[in-house]
Image (cartoon, rainbow, N blue to C red):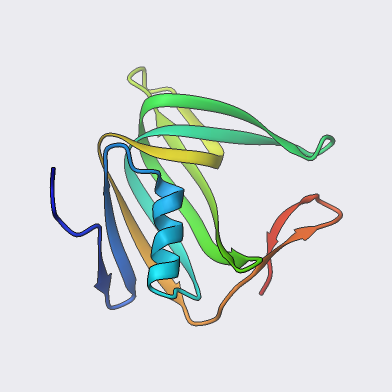
Length: 142
């Protein structure tokens, strides 16, 4: 097992490299707490097991679908706070061996075979999420 650090500080934020089996959202939340990150935007790529959720506006719930062993070609998101805890909002596009792409809101993300690279760009203001009653969903406040 590698003893390499999971993340390093950069001039604009952090570079994070996660290994097989890591829960990406849990690791981002841990980083936010450990480094007292007020808020951030992030991008990433790598091999994953991805659970996407399609928002059913009428029911105000996500319809989940999981894709295993896919390559995440694009990951974008934000890291903020909600009720004193880190809150991750992420979208991505992933493709399987057949090159069919799946994308949208990510409900869960685990590193598959290999690794996942994340670049976080820090913001100087602490941003909070709250439920927008009209949407029934979390919305980032500025």
